[in-house]
Every structure is written in C-alpha cells, then in structure tokens.
Amino acid sequence: MRPCQKITKQLLPAVRMSLAIELSRRGMTEQEIAKGLGIAQATISKYLTGNVSKSISELCKEISEKEQIGEIADKITKGENAEKEIDALCENLAGMHASQY
Image (cartoon, rainbow, N blue to C red; front, side):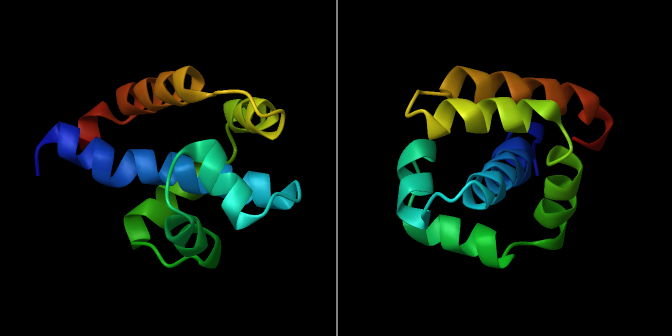
C-alpha cells in the first residue's frame, strides 16, 4: 500500500474515530457528529461501536490523547468548521509516523 493510501485508510479514520468518541462523550448524537465531521452516520456508528480494524483502533487510542482532539471537538460542538484543524492534525501525525508509511 502506498503512503498516501495508508494515511487515508488508517490515519484519517483514526482521527475521525477519536473525534467521534470525544463528541459523543460531550452528548452529541451520531447524526450531529456525522454532520460535524462531514461523513455518513453509519460510519460514526462503526467508530462508536469499535467496528474498525485493529490498526485504526490502536491509532485512535494514541490520537485520543492529543490535546488537538479536544480543541477540534470544541469547534465542532459550536457548529464551526474544523476541516483546517483536522488537516493540520493529520499532517502532524503523518510526520510523526512517517517511518510506518
């Protein structure tokens, strides 16, 4: 698998899963989370039930500890667009995990 494929198939889903879990903890519904992240409600359901690959689940545990998750969740709960922040976090994480990709 090429590096950019690993990022889109593992890293981005792990970031979204981390955000979905945080937003759910804050009381948002699956539908609200899906709208805030711009993805399908069915995907949010998979994230919240842990119905994902082991690699995504492991990345999610690491990513959930990042303070940026809370900051991005703050923006989403306020109804603000957080795409730039999500992109920046993904770029940062990709750099940290470059040897794995």
